[in-house]
Image (cartoon, rainbow, N blue to C red; front, side, top):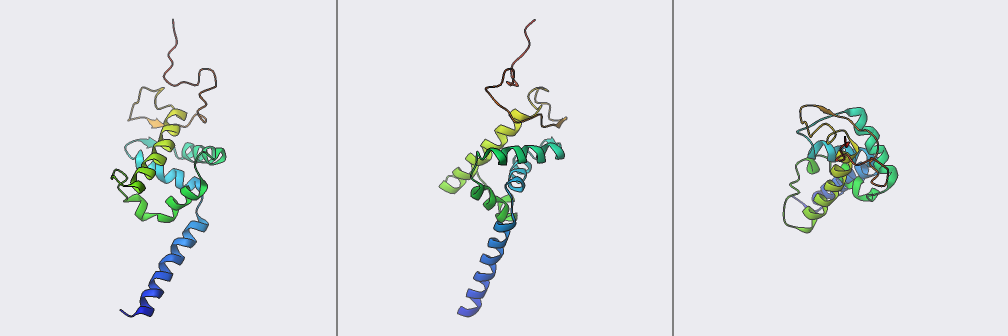
Length: 140
């Protein structure tokens, strides 16, 4: 393979990734993370989109990091984030934040962690709001 051909292939791949980065959105990335990490649950599609929009509006995770997930596409879907390097640790940390926020914001814990039910988004979890704790039980 000649040098010119290598540069052309490198430029084409870089251009493709760059284009995917520019057209990606935070919401698509958040949904991709949830589908990957919660693939054993049945998730309400409308609720996924609403949660993704709410989380993106809160800017809890940098938009550039989320867009890289969407730009990576197929690679992200098959990325093993349980490795022991800095990249895997960073990806795992971000995924855990998104999944935790989603599960706390849904009816998953309210319904007793029943994996057979469709998980529905109730509204963004706010620990400062009275009775927002999904683990709270009524007394009496």
